Image 1 (cartoon, one colour):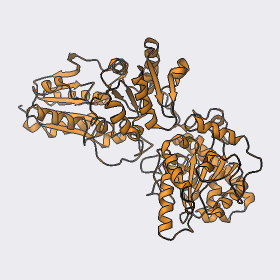
Image 2: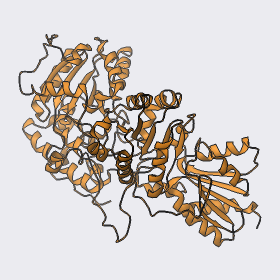
Image 3: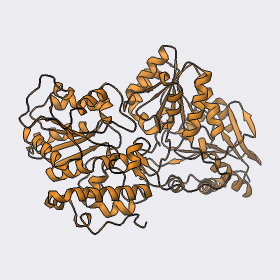
Image 4: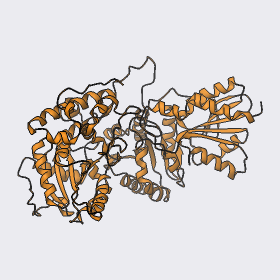
Length: 605
């Protein structure tokens, strides 16, 4: 890919790594920061990526690499989407400019395969402090106490419970120094919410006044960090490299757990990102102008509109999000029904357990999460919601392949996880019409929890059913009952196209959308028994997915029938374009056709 912004032949061009940065005179750092911002803005607006968070940490990251010697000293970023400056300063500036988030190119998060300076591959928040605690323990046990352990943590990450579990352990070990750099810009994706946000806002009000120094002693009115046993330095201007360097050296000299509080501006240096930090948290590549009549609405848009309509019809419907009301489609609901929408911060476990409480008290919660983040609350889903057979609806955005955010964001395990939960109905709508219908069906279900999943994508044209068998939709049928294709969700369009190809090859084929594939519907077993072969197609890993459930259910019903399961491989898939990853996995009309033809030799012809 051609570089959207070639590295200028100035300061950045002369930096091959942190050693060069440390040798740079301090009076050149402001110019360096400006070059880095120019590179980030030009690249991200072309390739897409996280814009606001990285513009906020330019000076902070410069100071970190001038005070600490990575990789000898360990630098951890929580979350990893604020690591662009770190990548640029550790010798990856050209790769950043030319390949960020492109197939085979630089990851948008820390990546251990890219550099020795990347220690953890984290893009789920609130984890770095636990990593830091473990690394500090190892440093103590292996007599490497002269190697600093530094965790850069956003204020949004401090809304997650795991962060406090780690702080509880870090603060209790005064002999194990961990430096917690609090990057406080008042936001996670959206403005940070809750009591800790109010506490930090109060502390931010003192920025620019005399800050606590290396001669730290417990003050009369300790911060929450000091109450947990950590020293506290700050708050400092997070865009003053000199002040940050002084503070970090002070923290290093204390030889104990310490918090350095840096106040930053999300989107610093780019007017649109400062004016709208939530919208410019991420930036998409320059949009392609759609062809006349082509669908442009996303799955999230359709859900957002239907939830508002549902809220008007049902006063018992409430919504919950974990710090992402915009990306999960809850902003419109929150604007219309502010008292019925709850943002709990980056705390998926609390979101789900709190939903259980809401349901116990007679309401119907709709918990809107990214598919990948539901992993963090599996225990609550299983034992707090499903065990109690509570009517909670989970709406999982970004299911299947998400694309450029890579392995941590693909929602390719959700059907496997959801399929292990008793009393849970799982629906996968194939188009916008079905999403609206099935959301209504989910909220009307009172015997237990339900879940709906859909991808990060535009919604394709609706596929009308040609017939209905119980709860199943028949989408295509031609010829003798030989091959039954069972697509899960939006992949139905590819299966219908493949079915036409197979008809042209003389194979009798039917395409059926189960709509609610878990638990496996009895009607699907009865329909499958009429055919010679079944092929299931899903954008979930094959292990434990819908195909595996259908195979087992057929066996339990003593129906001897070969089943071919098509899905994603059971390995971590890299970043890339969603369509290309699906094609590589064989989940396209061509791939489905080829797979079906390979298994067609035993069909009666």
